[in-house]
Length: 154
Image (cartoon, rainbow, N blue to C red):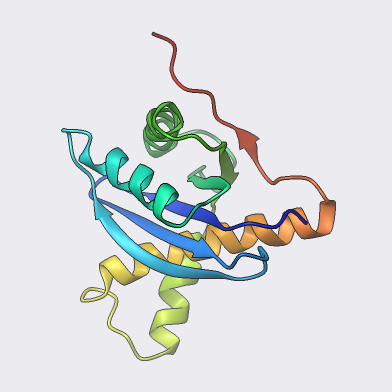
């Protein structure tokens, strides 16, 4: 298992949930919610967090349909990950995120939180579920989880 903090993101159309791991790459925790923006400030904030936490990698959720097919959300997440990859000095990887938001919502409901009033917390928790999955996969396989993202071609 590589040492170093990783950040995870759950890309939505309105908000981006962000999570971070500890330096040993063992545990993922919710961090913050970033609003999506047409002006690039969302990408800039993710880049700022990578520098602030000295992250070695960014894990982005890849929202596939339950059947495994790509959807409009899949394409949006890939496009966002490519934009981030162009703006950050660390690798960006896409990891299957099927059911991450459902898992996060269920865990918060079990803890007594109202999901309508906790949407930004759900986004952060979903990002933590995605990142934890990637950390566990790397720990068990010895290889980074997911697929690398390349910046878009000019």
